[in-house]
Image 1 (cartoon, rainbow, N blue to C red):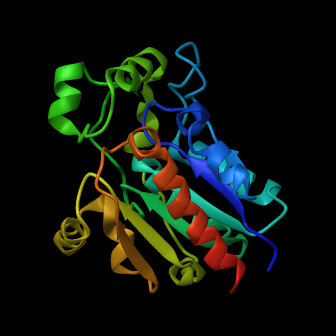
Image 2: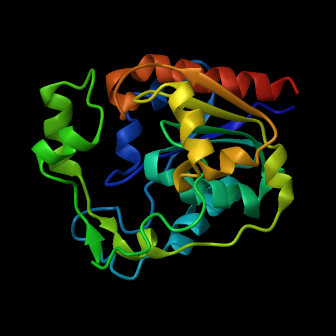
Length: 236
């Protein structure tokens, strides 16, 4: 098989810049890489009130189709929802999926969310909500300076999945802020952000304890794990 092209999709509030410490490590190991900025997350000046989940899915699908090679799709956090939908749209082009501290989401992320956008929470609230282990003050300051509010319509919208070919895509879950057992418990409880794990046929859990943003707290290790997935896919 041709060496897969790695596509990196960040989660809430982030653009392609979130992968700046991961992308060169992957490239140095011989991998072609594309890091995405999803629609509405280009800058705080972006008009995002009408940006939908379908727009995010379409952007990922477009990147997959433009890659010109089989794709390893690596998605982080909230990108697990449009990422999983993209595997439903073009499963024949995706040779492996990687979920970075997230899972293949199904349903709407937050159907009751009423605002146009969801901004990055205040520092104290963020620390209460998420694992910040290994993040420096510089990381957090840069995050806050560059964060873009998440389009609200994308949180409210659910999409239907139809193509069962997605179920056979080899899938790796990189567990950073929660353990593999905690992920399995979330699947058993029926949480939407991991619901796809209950139906996928080839799932591997890898533990790499660190923050919810491992692209900053452990970028080299994260790049190595993604590269391993791509290298395995190339031998199939």
